[in-house]
Length: 400
Ligand code: BGC
Image 1 (cartoon, rainbow, N blue to C red):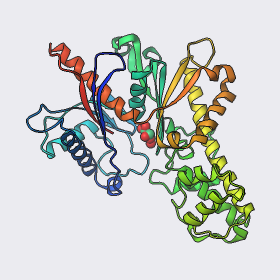
Image 2: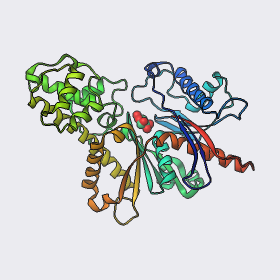
Image 3: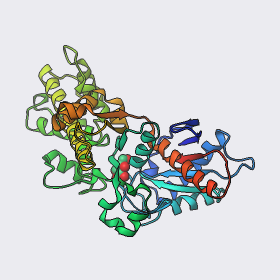
Image 4: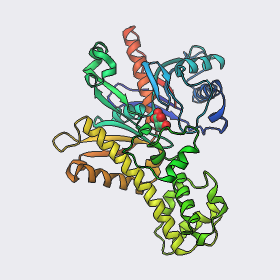
């Protein structure tokens, strides 16, 4: 959750307050109303704690960063098309998330909370990144899930129709690509990918995400190691019990093994012992485990770079002949896995050529998605106030 107030300069921010709230396990499976209640009460508590809500203050302007595929029908309305990642909340799909959040605010005793903008986290990242850096043309998420948004010519989006496209300021529109949902015969899969997919709550969906994002990299590695061990190629044919447990390896484990430069691969040994209960492993075992982890991360980074290059190509910014361009990238994998950032940059250079790639900045931006949601909400509210002749400073809360 974020609170921002903007000042009048471009890229200027008056005040920022943030709170990270961990998502409790129940939130993934409870009925939809419970999920929205959690968001509404969390935001209200935060607003009261930082002193921008309560005691007769005017109700807050709220930006709602909702990280799922939606059919957006207005700045403040849409229809949830599907849930992804671990979320399986009954009664959410097909509804307007903004109407659901408003109802939750009403149940929490704040019926006047003014939700002015609904946006995907990739769009929030684009807005948050671009607010401070005009070179930013892509907003990318590489965390639990993955996605990207970019600015497109409205005329290039057939579903908008000519009349709607003509109304858009500057003739441009933000496209949320939902690239995590890419699934095509050109995306090669391994047996481990297919087994992983079948065991997820949304089997058959988000296939590229399942090869790329933080929720899955540990699990891909675990399944590959399980396959090697069951063929007698690892751990002298003894399959450690926990190697068969979904979730036993995380992306953080993959990063740790991949980055293990010790002589005896001691970091890999301690991951295998702590995560899988494999206490005595040989050097060759550890080398193979490190290699598998490296390849899982490398495949993800190459997909990431390919998707970034495709979007740059789409907007004609993949050459040296145009000004430098940047992608704002938010999310834990990109933030914490330094080697990964190197693989992504190298893959982009392979794809675009060294010179063109040197024109592309992959900017790590923490919390850009929620900040961007607050910026957009504050800007939307400010525009409305100006139209009404009111000149309050632009400020907003965002729930993400
Ligand atoms: C969702 C996207 C979201 C991404 C990152 C994906 O699973 O479909 O809407 O942007 O995760 O949170």
